[in-house]
Image (cartoon, rainbow, N blue to C red):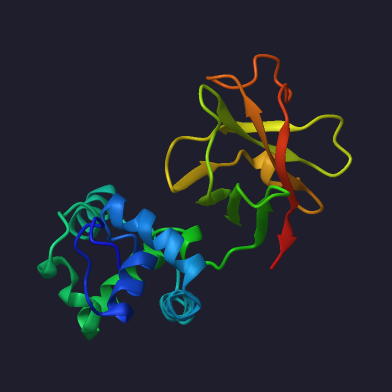
Length: 223
């Protein structure tokens, strides 16, 4: 593992569980976004935890908690700083029951579902490579190789099947992993769609359509 990555738990199974529940710091979570793509063994652990957590709600009825109860539960699980003490409950029955209660109180989040679409985006010469996965209305883009040209920017586009023009999903930041929230209208157009990356001026296309070279494109494949 790279020496410049933040400190991580040594147990891969625990790491996968924390990743599914989003208990990790932002830096580690971005590293795990990439690891899920690059490490098939770790990806299997993540899918296993997704299934295990999701199954906890199978025999539980829905409930509507008071605002006070919901706030206290969310603060106790999601608001505490990352530390070993924050993670101990993952291995206990009490912890699993708490997670199950949280999943019933809240609608099952997209992080407990597997990706529904994927696209392997690469330029013809292989100097720009990205992997996109979409779960629900969230797109996660992992940059594997390459970046913008000097003084330029990369912009991501959704090309829906039968649409008259591509729709911008935004200028891509200088980061290994980027999360993009899709509107309901865009999420409804994913079947048969494609993703493309274009070379644009800083700040993105001034016209609402690609103005520079389309560097890479790939179809969205339903999983």
